[in-house]
Picture (cartoon, rainbow, N blue to C red):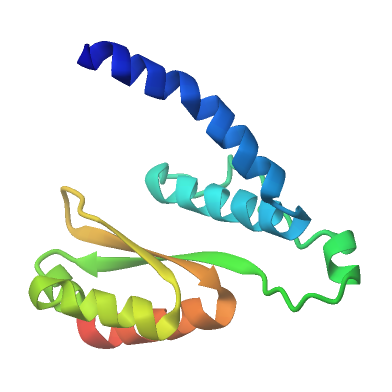
Amino acid sequence: MMIQAAVDDVRFLPYVHHKIMEKLNEQMLWQLAIRGALHCRCFCVNDKGFLDWPPIPTIPDNIKAKGNALEEETLSIINVPSGRMGLVIGKKGASILSIKNSCNADILIRRDKGPSDKVFIIGPVKQVRMAEAIIRGRVC
């Protein structure tokens, strides 16, 4: 019985996706594509950096023409020395939540085996630079 319910839920997902996509305008679709591309880069970092990835698209002219004040989105990667990530995260995540809220940027953390962990910051350039400065200040 539970398996059939799960199968029915999965079959319903394409319908939900279609309905959501109908409601998105050009600007929302562009923002969704940019954020998706930037988030993918967080989990696919290799020795070449992003040289083998296609460039992040700029704001389309038809969206610029409408006069919407959009900012370019960017991704910043900060290497945090091993053992220092606690300073970034804080007790029960309080520090990282405070940075996310004050800078209005997405912040993802990836702990790696090796000499350093990584903090990924995604958002408009000004907010990303502000979050970078706060995080670097905590780590140094």
